[in-house]
Image (cartoon, rainbow, N blue to C red; front, side):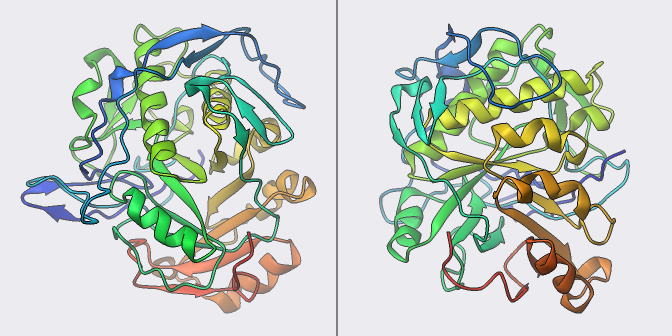
Length: 376
């Protein structure tokens, strides 16, 4: 079973957030996840995508009805009173739930993209960020805003807790910004939590009370609703000015989600996510799910993996390095890792790595020498 990721969460005003690359904070983003209008678009081909034919038509939203807002543009505060403003992150492994969960779905695509030009869901057109292979990164999923002083080219931060003002501040420093959004589990306390129907919710995520796996099969009774919710989430990222998305928990088929989710279901859903994000003018990073790297690489712009050295999985990331795309490796001090153990190997393999605390709370950032400088 693929490793799963753990995530420590902050609790504010009595609300708790949990996750493992997922979080459960609430922000005043003004988003109603189910408000996006879903429609079927034209068929889209995945360039070079292998395995699992992605079903013909693409389910995307026309864009106009999503209620995503730039959230928190006033005063820099993005949190509703009484809501939890946290992040997620962390690591972990084994069949214990938390992280690395994901979904399935049909391969529907959202719009077409070629040469960096995007069009489709939401009517977005333009040139999206195409990260360089050596893009340096910093990962903080619990602080909103995070410490903006890190000398890197990209920040990966929570999409709900951080507002447009923070994204603009990082842009002013020459830093690209990646939007963390959970795509495979239900988390209580998120602004759109009430939009998830009961039929989408599956088994509990072990170790995280209230968090549930989602039914991401295209054959599921509420798949169109799931697509609508996720499209609205990605539009939150778009409306705040993020350059890319990190969709978490997209390997639920390797866990026990409570549904008969197959690898083919997961592959199709993950490709749909990638195409939808691209259609909104943003780049997208694959998160874990190393068993499907070869099939997913053509659809994604880079990959973020946790502890590939600790678990001897770094070779699996080769399709991304071969394609000239960034590979980010987060290793954890809590699991006994040190930069002396993995940095030389990462650098040799063209992997950009850094040592973090399992909390991903900004308390530790010890980058390898190739994770320094505003390269993006």
